[in-house]
Length: 243
Image (cartoon, rainbow, N blue to C red; front, side, top):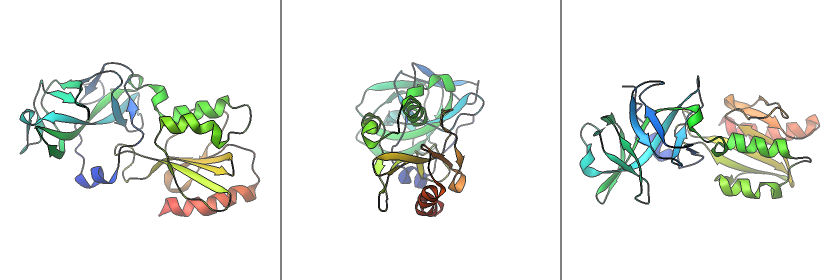
């Protein structure tokens, strides 16, 4: 069984962030195309690593009845129901799986485990890169902060650092995204105008071509900018990302 265990340090360092959503009832598998280990209901939030060969390595954090797991082995028993934070059933374990205990609470335990989902089983519009790309592709003029009102409601960006007219908003990556916690997307505004984005995964756009950014990130500029303006952005944000 190819189930990945997560360290407590990693889980505690990465707060819930840009989780993806299942497109319908889906089957979590032990490996791509392999044995089905969990059934998950539609519109369930999962946290996906970048797709590879049409499959996502996906992580799920859910509540389990305490009697349905073995605290010594970390095994969740077959036929155990899975619950969300509100106590609603979101799925069922079909065979014994190994998971990581996060914490226990009254009657239930919060646990994490991983498996594989088909890329088509994830709603495209729940991926921040897709949503950002559609917003950018559909704009007939330069994007402003006002154009991002709905985008910021749908994805949990946080105000980040700036200098002078430069302002930025960061969407943190989740525990499946990168080996070390960090940003998934940083939107950089020059005054009211969106000027650039630093992002860990490719955007779904032909209109804007990403370049190489710091520490393995992509760098995309959204407007025709002089090199001096690009250098001002790089000088401020690259050292922060590279730390």
